[in-house]
Image (cartoon, rainbow, N blue to C red):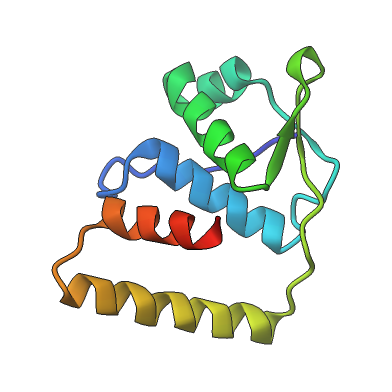
Length: 122
């Protein structure tokens, strides 16, 4: 499977986060459907001109968030995820934007915001 991700060196987000975000968007839109086998870490790293550890981190975080399933030597596949229609996706994005804006208004940085979200999900 060709991932067709684009890593922008001018983007302030680190490359692993750019890759992670693009994969989430494609998984949630079903452009990459559940069960699809993703390229091996080294192969995708070579395709995107990234260090293998960068791709491995994106995969690990996506697995921790439930988007991917790693089966050792059998590779990494897209996990089944709940279908979300466009309106629900838009409303969810609005809620996230409001939350992030509120947290930033309190002077809280991105790592702490993510930590709070992870803690709330536990």
